[in-house]
Length: 139
Image 1 (spheres, rainbow, N blue to C red):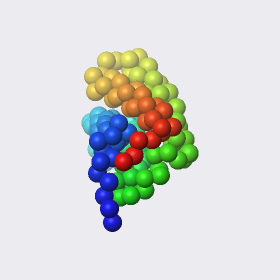
Image 2: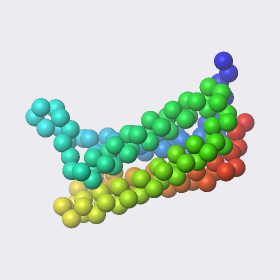
Image 3: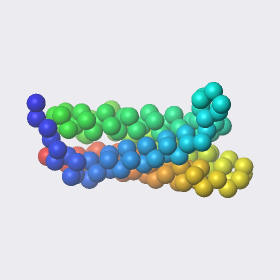
């Protein structure tokens, strides 16, 4: 089995790594300090939607990166790949904006504001990855 580690040096591979780091940061910032006495995660609906979207697309980016690294080189040019990242963009933008709007109404919460800003940054990276999928540069 071959490993195509050169993919990580391409722009699409670097964006995938940043998407995973930012997605993990969003999940950490949203889940930190939100456990109740019974160790259940309790948060508002807008935070929960952003949390779920971040987890889903974090694992999605991880799965695509692993698939390309082990040899599925046709994935970055496929239609499913493009649809996935357009959906990620159009899910992350409204959830992040809704989270930031409600977060600023409730009060200034620095970690929440950072999580919302990271959500918008992540959606821009998803959009850039979707645009680059039309001209994949896989080694």
